[in-house]
Image 1 (tube, one colour):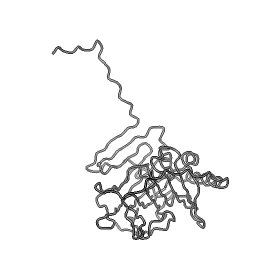
Image 2: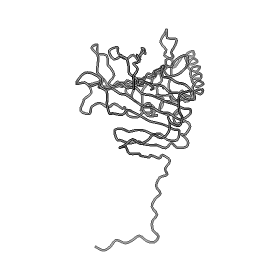
Image 3: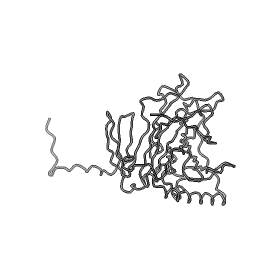
Image 4: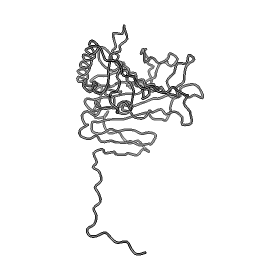
Length: 329
């Protein structure tokens, strides 16, 4: 299959250092409602794990995220208008598919000659969504920094993160365990499992949900007119356990995700996503049966069903009559 080299536009505070900014490769025909972003974007472990024998460099103790000052009346009104318009736009999107790039920064990340931290791993993949509760996230290609040879290496033979939600179940490939796991969703989560997930920014964001869960503000830099930049800090403990801050860039015209940066708890590690507008398809190009059907269990993998609706086991019934007496020894 041929490949197409796509340049990475500048993302301001999302900037990848210039030495790490060569063209990215995306297979032909091929990332936020969160993702960002139900699994990687829904808080599954990172696909790229550092070598177990390696020791991270010493780092400063993570600082607790400071509570931002209250918004001015003007800023609060602008945020209300944006969230209302964004919710209306999301409600009008029936299907969406898009290619994405992802960069992971952590304590094992290399640094350039100027001391600027580079990505520990970089990957590309695709994301698909069908309203209200179907989604797919798949990493197709991944490279990881090799400190011994001082360059990024293709992770040949290592499948990336991959999950599918068909509205009633979430299917997750756990490649390290060679498993395909199905988790059935309880009835109360069906129809909203994605939009109410850990990060609803990519899939059907709703204004009330966002305001309840996050402290948000518009942080678009001066002079930027074709993008809207948002900062979101978690209000709830469950969200704060997954990330300390999210920075999101929306396309001003389409109000669709362009880029997202997720800071892990502590603020030291972060994941950066860029959504490829050239492969973005809204309300076209998806096969609802093929794209969100139950995946086939790969050869050598074990299928495991995790039914969250299964009732707890009933206590064993004791036989009628008095308990048996122990035998004399």
